[in-house]
Image: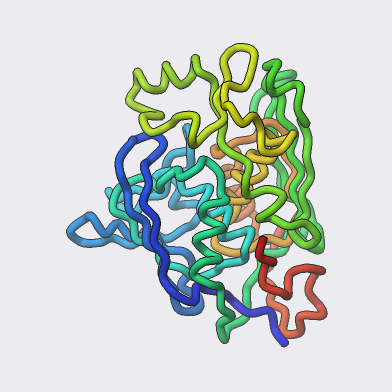
Length: 308
């Protein structure tokens, strides 16, 4: 049995607000044919443009990953893309009525729920993986400010991330985490980690017309010393787990699942995108593979992702 591509069984909808725009937005996730990939459709625009995911379609990475096709844009795609990566969804149309994906609860858990609600079905086409053959690494800054991200050859998909925020609330939690998609449970271990911010940054962002939809119900918010959310953290290492969640979404903008070991320190949307572009510039460093027999695939990649 080959490892097959996957899409949704039926369509599913959600309504929410954009984290930065504060705008009400409706999202409809629809099934798509094999080899369609994940395509965002701005149904509020007259020509309903298709915005296909690819590293080159990423046009802005300041606070989130933004995709563009011509003048049409979709902001903050990474949490939905992360859920697709975690559950192995290859083909899907995302109809959206505004230019920002709704933040929902600030994690990928609501998107996991939506995808599982729609149901995930196998399609009669082989799933194509991008297998890393030699290391790719990108850097920014030096010394304590150094950020880096790399992809190493690995028979499976594993992500390791280290953060360093120099903030008492963050420093008292896990700073480093590793997640293996083949052996871990994405929905349980990663998807619930929320985005986070500091009150001083939120004030500055709002003055610039950003984070208009952000609040304690869709982010972890901290003052100079502590977490302000009444319920505290969902994981004792929720901050660094959210960075893994983001990285999985950013890397899935490649358009195919990776067979690789991703490692990063203080990386973010910008560096993750630079890493994918560096990868595409070195065709000798990777190859596209399919598995005609699921027994040849790395452990955990043959089955559909487990439910909760």
